[in-house]
Image (tube, rainbow, N blue to C red; front, side, top):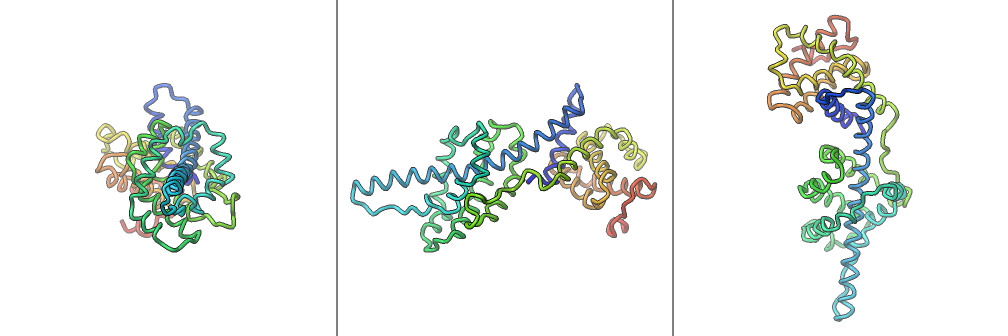
Length: 315
């Protein structure tokens, strides 16, 4: 689940924090990096568990409404949403159950949020269309939860406050973790029953090594990388730059020089996008130009043994 996009985000955050911390210890900082990545994986499970929590709330409401209908001689309510086949499979998923049982955090601690979310869902057209549909397939049950997640969990300001109380990392992680949850929903198949595989924490050991190597190269070679910046732009005044710009370019140079299989244009594009989120409004354009110039300098100096892309050559 933890991919290189998330790793780059964390390296930017932890590198910036490293320089802001007066007591700099690289080993401690690296452990903090890996811990923050593991917390993103915790969030992935926690958001999946939210679907389960809402489904449990739906069953409670169904039981109350059923008893009322029996008592008052009214038509029995539909159990379609309460018995949603995808949600029930997720609730019984062995990996999710094992993970939740090992964690102290549970949505039972925020039951008022769960109830409010359930109330919002049952008032929606997504819910009413689902309940009115005669399609009782597993696919329809899975699809309604994909739509509900996108509409009520991805775009939900209330959840930010809940997550902030649970972990300092989670609000920054949620946007990308949401995409992993949606991917997981799409992957579920009824034939897999409780053994449906969730996304692994790391796709392979290479990604974990990527995180370590990128972070260490960034910190250990900082002086050299900043010299490359200066040599590329002789009149460049560090004091006039946003400090985050320097950090982002330093990490980008580390990636260019440390990982021969990552194309130069991929690295530049990734860190330009990060600048749009983490630095000033003008930073992305500046960083794009500077990294292109730095890459050319490194290639021409024989320090970077990667080809420039055709687009970069024409600049």
